[in-house]
Image 1 (tube, rainbow over the protein chains, first blue to last red):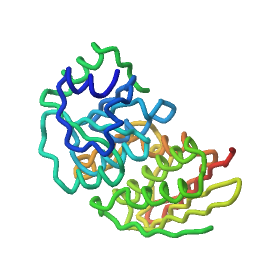
Image 2 (cartoon, rainbow over the protein chains, first blue to last red):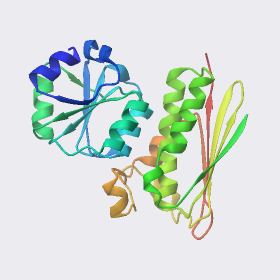
Image 3 (cartoon, chains in turn blue, cyan):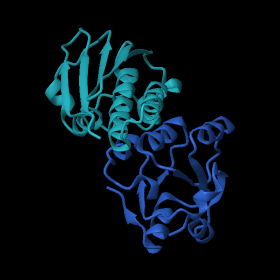
Length: 119
Length: 138
């Protein structure tokens, strides 16, 4: 499903969109965790088509996305995202969006849209 | 090409900077993307381990045509039981480390899973040396 459609339906608020082309990118997989070591266990997935969802708003979730070649990070529960983190995301060319609801709701919606688990 | 990076104990704010620099360098050298990802993940896990558990140390990156090696050497305090530390889910990470999203007890076994070569030597009150290698196949 295209990121633009996912953002419209969930809805998501974009905080950092380093490249508008990302909106046309199809995302097929999602992974959700606050433990970055769990996320780092992903390696054979299609990183460019995977969304990473977390409530961990800090540089470590961003660097985890970077190491995994993930292009889009979703922070749940509308947490305050520091400007330095958004600047760093721009440098690393990783998109960041905020979702107002809980992790459970975010995962449920994405599952309903047909996204599959990244493993 | 050999490059050495320093890692400071408990420096969570800088955590990942070395692995990020290594990833950038390997991209510039046009190493295949899937190999870079494995190296980046292993390097990041090991860098975080050094920050959480060690008194600080160095990361040495050795790039050859057909092999990329990383050596993580710290100044202690050492691992009492390596077999236990390798066990998935076992962790002695601090509350601070957990706040940063680490301490799941998956680090060492994930590093071993990523690498083509893995060797760790350590004992209590001694430095830990972790050596990992990756074959570069186009």
